[in-house]
Length: 463
Image (tube, rainbow, N blue to C red; front, side):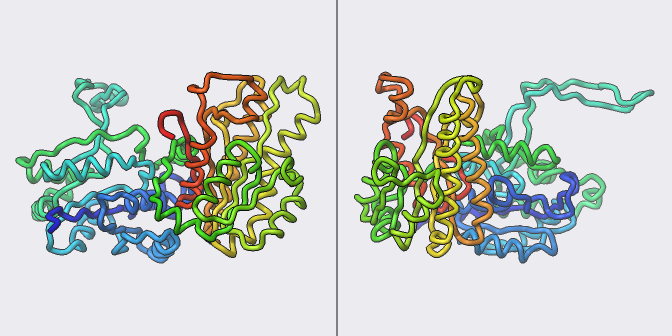
């Protein structure tokens, strides 16, 4: 019999985005193709340690949360409850909704969508020993204690920075402990005059003998509070190395056997290996390229005719790409047209032509970028900029097509041993390059997953 306590993720989404400059809850702002709340729910829903999720939402917006949960198929969400007028009241409503049975409670700010799965794992593990756990990181800034002076504030004290930590969430407790702390707090007439700023503060104040363990947090586990935070979080999602899931052999069979997979650029390199692997799992694969059958992705009519030959389409993969190096002032018009046509118009055309087919099947589109998309470099101006455009296209389409059930993702491989690269750089040490097979394997993992709007890195040593 499993003696493990159930672990409940409580997502606190009760605020309104006033500091962000909005009249709607900031957790409903879209970042990287999804609302902030969706990103956060996806983390807890995917965590194997979490058995149940309870959402506390701003009054008047419960219907939107119900739609998000249904659309995202977040099966662990058991309750959606109205939040209170303060953080402590919202937390108390969650605690009352959890019932009498002892459990682990992980209280997390909904507007921290970049939480690492590792932190959830370590918090649940820490609760095996402690009944209260906080997540914190060292303070990289000097913290000063200010007091009123004759002309503004003055510094009274500078605490030792080595002992200071910046608190994050989740804050985690045995249910009986956090309930008792709040019961004592509400019985204290001075609590409302000096309310605690977080849940660990309530335990520290009213159950001082209960030790609070610290799990290392992450600089990326930021809280979206101010307008600039929206842009920072969006960029972090864009640059984040999202992990591809690891399907089982049964997952591949169920997702691919008898399904129709179309690969553009499937004659060699990564595309050829995607074709081979997908066929190995029972998919009906259709491969198109300019060398194989005269299909040019830069020509919308050519792509449309290819898809019309196939009929039903469950998955579309576009690996077609070209690399012309050189200074922009010296590159030929033909090279410019080829780079922009294949590397950017190609994905646009493939997406436009594939949309009605994927809407019918609720399928997936997979595009490819390059590590050079994060920063343009000399002699790569055209290549880098088109690859950056593909990332933005991926995220935009994931947002546009979410209501149609279409998933759109992008694979970002490190330097890979492909004919395109060999033509540009000549022979390179094999141990410094990814194999096309490894990239193709990750591509299939992403293709059959529930991910959308993600950029998945494939790196040496992890592929």
